[in-house]
Image (cartoon, rainbow, N blue to C red; front, side, top):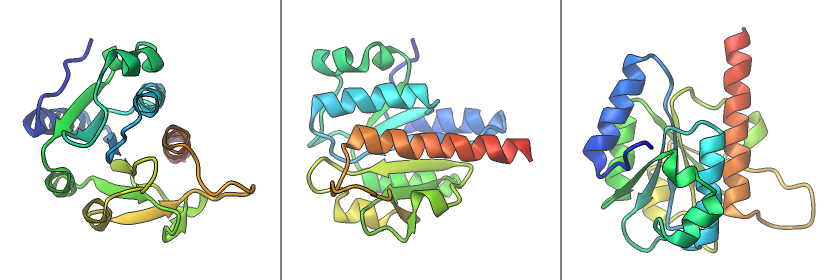
Length: 178
């Protein structure tokens, strides 16, 4: 079982370890995800896609509860997880480590399938109703939309997380093959 990260110092050590291994960091930032089912599903998806750590704010969010653990079906035991006091500060620190912060938004500058995902990246997913908070959005290096081809206007946050993480992995495989 990976140790649950307690604070930004633990997160920094994880990032340094990945960089020493010359492996690109892949992080998932969940901005105020309040539904335990969504958090559990996001954690399970993060494990499946090889995310190094999931970052959430300490306040106004669901945390690891029995309900989250049940939906995650073991993923809570398999992924590094950190709650931060100040999400914007953490995002600035990630940028200082050359990790791109990419947010998802319906009005993104590029669509997911035409965006060259950076090697070291932290994907930011907003909450179920309002998306990312203003300050979180302002700290993103890029905003990417998920193209919608049907009649629904938005996707569940866990589905969106799966799509961006899967596309990140797909692009990494293609870059390795070149």
